[in-house]
Image (cartoon, rainbow, N blue to C red; front, top):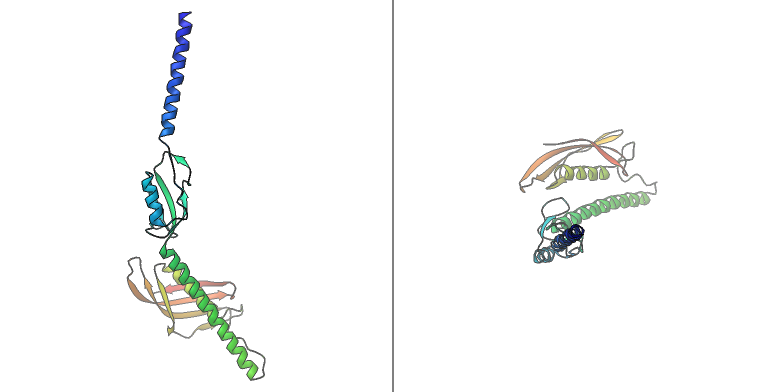
Amino acid sequence: MKTGICARGIVAVIGALTMVLSLSACDTQKEVPDVTGKSFSEATATLSKAGFTYDAKDGTDRIAFDGTVTGQDPKGGTKTDDTKVKLTVKSSMDEFREKNEQQQKEMAEKKAQQQKEMAEKKAQQQNTPAPSAEKSTSGGLTQTYALLACRQRGKQEFPYGFKPHFITDAAEPIWSPDSVLLQFGATVKNEYNAKRDVTVNCNVRGSNDKPEVFGWTAQ
């Protein structure tokens, strides 16, 4: 009889200890603040105050120092033992890059539209059918869209800075039935913001809707 009572007592003690240990483990977990949508400085201050560190990266996977938080892992409201929160940040550099690319695209489209309108106006004045605004390949690729394709390839090759000199330092295009070779100067930058001038040879084929750079050198 005493043996049975003793066994039940031991089981009860073990159960109580297990519950205490479980509650202690729960007490070590902290709730992650929701900082999505906040500025970088406000988000990091909120996390630090709550006892968390952070790892912040921008759209190019570089360490972020400013901007707006667009995502976090773990999400806000999550309880976790981990003290580090990963932040995805739209930095001022991301915004500048997007704005610059949009401006260049709009300028190229505006130029193409102006050239087309000028050609159509001239044709109307001469009372003749409107010619094509630009010379093109057999696939319908014009110089304007070939230049856009070369600009885009340049940005891929030189992500820290690529400035083509299409107007001030460019040779006459070399046309073949299905492609065009564009030769022009450009200024490029490396990750340390050091500049140098290169001569680009960019061979493009395809159409205005889908131009393809199939040959590229920049020396």
